[in-house]
Image 1 (cartoon, rainbow, N blue to C red):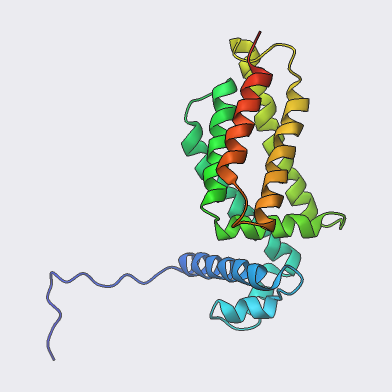
Image 2 (cartoon, rainbow, N blue to C red):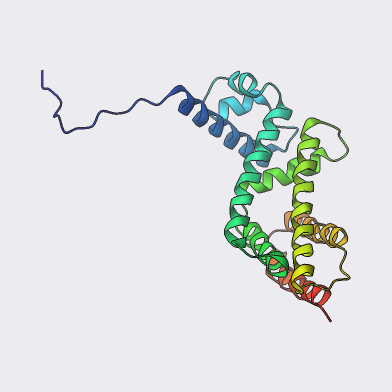
Length: 212
């Protein structure tokens, strides 16, 4: 029998934790595919397990319920968005942070990430249906509102934003525009002028927020 050369590295066996992480990622990706193909209600744990290449029962064993699986999809999408936002923000604050966040959101929608489109479908489906998923989505939204309020407060401190601006009111208006844009983009993605809408919005933001 030929011995393996001593300089050939042995293939490292993955740990149980690594295998679990990989299977969880594949299950979440399969859930995203099914949500986009069939909608939230047409997605089942059984089909998620099969699409991911595992047994029918693995998704149920791993997550316990469809609601819990959907929460993981939301967390997955949120992590991706936060990474994109933080890259754009850097150390910006105040008005610059608001404009940077707007640019980041525009690019994010233009790239049409699967996980974000799936989260939007989950968001719409969860409205008016009290559940742990609804609670998770509300917490995600509240965190986004806090970010915008903080940027407005910073801009007032730095004199880059008019001191009469209401931070909470602006934050609510900011996300009303973002969600309205998402709705129209989802409805007619090929006909919706995404760049034009965001250019106009930034123009209005500058007019509304700049002092004097």
